[in-house]
Image (cartoon, helix red, strand yellow):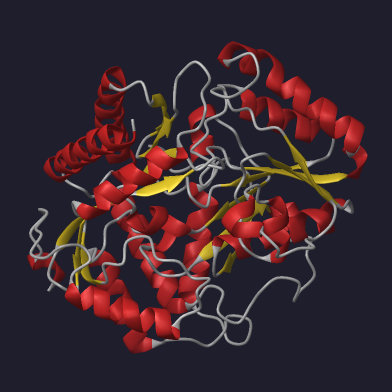
Length: 450
């Protein structure tokens, strides 16, 4: 049925429509208020860049379920793989009686992730779970306890990963105390680094390692964890060379370099992984989101000596590497390889960057357009001189997009960044239509707010 969805926007009711409003009433009565709703248009069907809601509206998807459905909703390979697998075997728990798809996914991860060294992988359910296990592995292998994370980072919602996540609301507020031996250093954030972009290029690395030396001690540090391009924090791209310099410093001091590629991995940035752009080879890499076409799956992949240092039973989980999720992952990876989705991500990025840069030439509220591949952001400010975050304008633009049937996402520690994460299978025509809607929404919100 998904293949029949025309790849165009179509609104037949206001948003949300009556059926979605009725479902939202049920949601409010049944679901914890802690689970939010951005756009309460209840989705019943999807294919590539279009989502169909309960009222028959067709919405353009610029979010991909937060970089999850990179191969598109209803991807034929993923659908067939899931249907075939679930008819054969739903679950056993790989630690009780194993199955081949788990091994196949690990083999693929070991081959695709950066570096040609001997690797091992372990599968989990979510990005947060992968990050938490990467920390466990790093501490076990090094015999050290301290973990260094960065300002503006997002690593998950568990107690341990919240301790590494930078943003208080809505993630951390009143949920503490958090796990110990977690330390935070400044992020190399060119747009907001004191002194500007050039100062960031020249000063950020030394500033960060000086802080680790003084406040933590290299000999106490098990790992440094960083998103090569930060996600929820605002799609922050560090200066060229920063990641490689950081990885070399870690190696010099026996510190493991963990790349959190949960959001940036699997062709999203125009390479298989964001680390690939600079030839950075992490000791451990965490993946999830785009790995399995919408099914829950995550992984930690790393050097064989590190991964094999864990005692039997030290890693695992009841559902980790479920056979149906593994089948979806193998089909997603096949799609990315066969359809050249890394190359497609670069083409999408060129279109997004070009159109958003033109928008910035018309509106001074556009502070910066940044990102790589189909992971592009636009930071909004009240004025370019002070760079004061324009959070209210960001929210207003987002609401205007939603009313037009364009599913958009915001992010940023300061609440003032748009993130663009369309499916890598979206057509140029649909992408252009979505950007037209975004421009209309932007102009409307600026006129209303100023």
